[in-house]
Image (cartoon, rainbow, N blue to C red; front, side, top):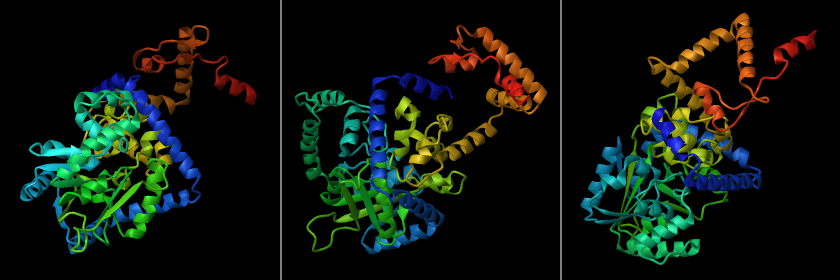
Length: 457
């Protein structure tokens, strides 16, 4: 836990985390309003959960159907077992097409596999505004849907002035205009466009992008080559199921009825179409997902990447996304990263288990249950643990009434001795973490067990 604690201790109370907290609280409030204004939301969440679990239970069949449908539409489908193979496939496609300049839309999967680093020999430009800011700053995303939630507009203004050579401004519309002007040239020059996919439709062979900027649509329509990287778990059976998931996705992510752009791409452009790529490729990426699907953590693959769990999580809002030390932050990352073998194995312990993530999740993933399961397995693999030893001792004392009463009496005496004016300012050893930021009330007089015994008499 030392590395995780070090990162969290360094993050608590810093300006980036303060900005993250404000942004997360704003998104959480927008989600609450959207759900209140949409009475069928509860039923839609139940239906969305059923769709995702059904798809995962029949994933092999839907993957086969998607491959056949996509190939009929003219898309070339590639299967990648891991990150290295996925990156190699993309590089091979770009070299075969003679591509040198690439525009790319936001994709957590490409962050997971390190695609930008693998394409070091190409000029790759992130075109989502948040991802563009992250790229030119040499930074990392801190949120699944809002990559630069941790940065203020003043910081972004100074970054644009330093890197893009423009006059300083912290006015958001002007910052948008600066980025738009810079990126427009990249779109027109691009030899290839790379995107992720929110969903892939098995019955039609389509990939679906949900964005609030036009960059995703530009990446799929202007360059002659379009490459979509899709995690194998992002399949949906048909457009009917897609419609249900779109109903809950935007409301849960940003509080919108529907995102500004919902782009459905089915193969390359037809002879009678003016826009669209000459060739399209879909790279279906496993990278550990099959292993997770066969494990006790399979439910986490139902996630639709809305970020709602991050926005309500008291731990995420206190430490920010970078403290998680990997690609996927927040409650979903605390399960997904250890399950995939990405990031810190100790992430399941970075949770209060309050259940807020489960209540916010649009597909009702029981994240606290998954975290407890991961913790249990991690402790079982440990040869020795002071925490485990302490819990074993506690279990023995708590199951023996005589020992328990003696333990309470000794503990009460010690706490009364340490209290000053009814409050305890410092506790020893690991208990000092509690009193580092708050005082602890001293024991009551008489103790509850004495009061209860006298009351019954």
